[in-house]
Length: 371
Ligand SMILES: [Zn+2]
Ligand SMILES: [Zn+2]
Image (cartoon, rainbow, N blue to C red):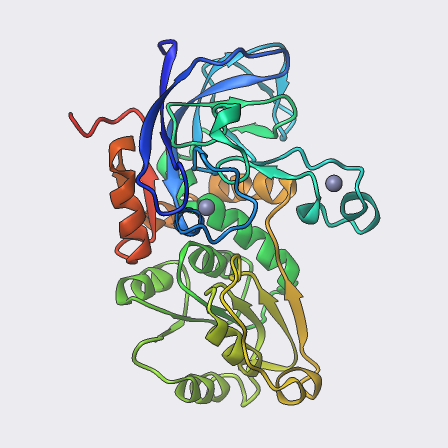
């Protein structure tokens, strides 16, 4: 790798992506430089592009989940799985860093995803500070970042196909407390919803429903393990409720997962759960506006258990890796990833992701649009 590193920079909301050159960074003791092989353009990046997330220090290098080959390692680098990492290893890293372990959320409430000091590669790190995002030929892994060797059997495309959606899904299944033999309904068939379906399947769910669109995502939902899918655009909420109840002894499902990011989804979700069921809300990563629910009907009388789910923790990262290692050959995680784009075409990738032409775009920072 030369001393000049190319990266795609998002200068601000709704401004065209710029290709900029960066100096190769110094790598102090405990740090590493990762030569990026794949990164992603996901729904979060579309939100970033529209300025829908607060506290983002533009300009940024997006690409929060990324994978590559360790180019430089200074000192000993131990992965989160306990193994020593060396230069030349295929490696991945947990995008959340600097969670402090000292603030009230970290220590008192044990909710580190709400840590006040927490930062996230590709989202809350400024490009002024360096190579903190995967839309770059190299990513700077500062000391303390959680890293891991990518298992030999997992391809880069499988890892990114799962990507941030898979980490979130691991957390969702944990929050849902899904038990073998329980029924589940997933609202939303984007990357998070699709990964949640896959994990519910291998986690022993009895019946898995999915509500989503467009049609090709519903086909993918079935490939990943959904038993019954509802096209959001051609069924009404009333029809979906009748059908779900008819297939669950008139009760509704044990667990509903909101992975749609729609205020309307939150109005429908509680009624799809059985009385005393659980409702995990994970899709409202940005402000989708108010939902209108009647608390008496939707929550109180139903004895419904509603649980938010924000971000993920290192254990979800490690478990996502072990799931990919075990199930990568049987679950088509790679199919969640769509086309692969070079740095010069990331405006088009964002437009394709937003228009739902692809579930997720893959980024190859070393490919050239100019051939
Ligand atoms: Zn903290
Ligand atoms: Zn993402």
